[in-house]
Image 1 (cartoon, rainbow, N blue to C red):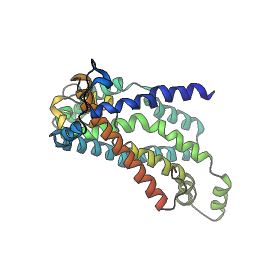
Image 2: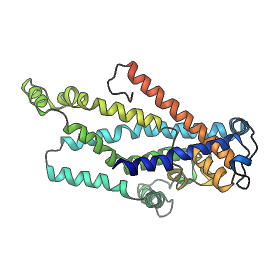
Image 3: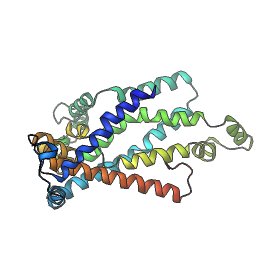
Length: 286
């Protein structure tokens, strides 16, 4: 049963790692890896000295931090709210409704978001006009992009991520709640002293994984929302890799940038795991 899984990771994850050597070459598809000349760290120097480096790094970290600060607590709060519902039918319906957006394609989600934010036909601006306010060109002003992107991710993924915390909540011993009630603990006190400590190990693990993903933002999620007007806040490392690597066929440069992104993600995971161990947490990855 493990063979298909192992083959998948070997063929599609580990073997392609050999291709990162083209980051050190002036790669040509016609010459191949063995025939392309070696240039060392030339493409890394080009990236670090380019006018795009500071902008894409800032945007990538800012969007990642927005998602960490606002997106990470969202499924935890949702799971706690669902867990507190006593009406089982309403609980199931609510969980299903919040879970459904996860299975909708980002193409569809981006299209719905752009329509809702339209200055002429969008629901949000129509409501603003009825309130006597002016329409806002949300997708033409750079300052709104980080908030819009984070909001869409929260709406789309919170329901699915909450499943992990709901599973952790079911593992808490019910006798702990009974003992807390016997001691006169209110529901907020039960939440603070029983529920949260019971899911802290899961929260720590998910936090470490989330920190590692701060810089590795999927390019299609950003690409579907960005346009040339707001590139100063929407261009991230992954979209730069796409434009330079696939659109402009600059494979070596794109590989160097992607390798830098992977290195930063590795440093973030190691740092967050070390922080968890320093705090004497028993839920670090290793």
